[in-house]
Amino acid sequence: MTVSPYVTGLRAHVGHDLLLLPAVTAVIRDGHRYLLAKHRGASVWGTIGGAIEPGEEPADAVAREVLEEIGLAPQVGSIVGAYGGEDFVFAYPNGDRVSYITIAFLCAVPRGSRFTFTDDELSEARWFTRDEIATLPREVWIDRILDDADRTER
Image (cartoon, rainbow, N blue to C red; front, side, top):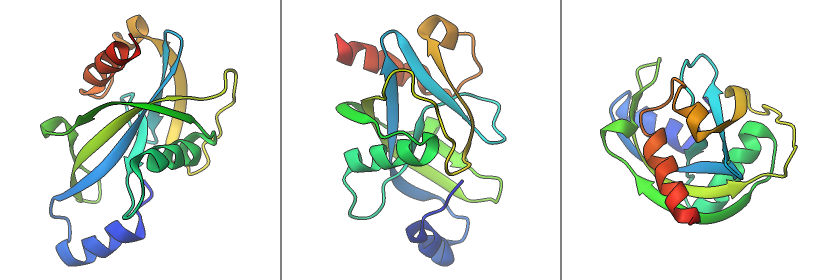
């Protein structure tokens, strides 16, 4: 996990205490398939995303995160929704605790593009249908966001 200078500065003051951070999530869709990824060392599938930097527009943040994580510049579309709560509270191996409020955006990448894990944060990325996703070990919030994405597309 790459930590921004902003969060590093906050951590110097609060240590491992809980931080509330704004974030973005890329709901990357190709027809009836969604792109999911695994973070290095993780056993569950999730979406691509990350923290919004101070002064950064959320749509720019989601484009940056996708580019950093899979080496592709996405087409950023409409907002799927905003999410938070217990499902978005994480404790990292180093003891840092974070509660994310994330804005999910529909995104697209060029069909047939190859993924390049440019920042070494991800170990794998693959396309799945909703039926396939239902059988995967996945983040608890995935179904909620994808259900909203399906409604957004109608």
